[in-house]
Amino acid sequence: MRVFVYGTLMAGEHYHHLMDGAPFLGEATTTTATVRLVDLGWYPALTRPGSTAVRGELYEVSPELLDRLDALEEHPDVYLRGPITLADGRRATTYWLDGAEGVTIDCGHWPTYRSQLATRRHAEGSVWPRKTNGR
Image (cartoon, rainbow, N blue to C red):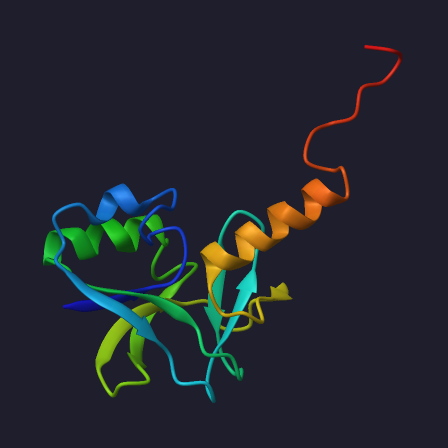
């Protein structure tokens, strides 16, 4: 089964190790008229409706890996696994969190957004906790 990932399962992200052994089918982008990527803190959510082209990665996953991904995403209690059509016409499944509230990630790319956020926080001096009482 083809799975579109857009957050912590992407290469270089926290849970990418779960994708070990899954054939990488390439980068992929959603159609712009249907989805929105939102920041929920430590991870993003793909929700509907929206108007953002979300960039992610496409993998071919085994039934065993799909079970592990379902457990990570707490499917069906939190995220729902369902179909998505990509900009190039390919179809895949992904994890949806419809109705998710959070900051919209306008750039549509979780790693880019996180990098921009870290840069902004560093510029504001809020990366590290401030010392208090002279310590």
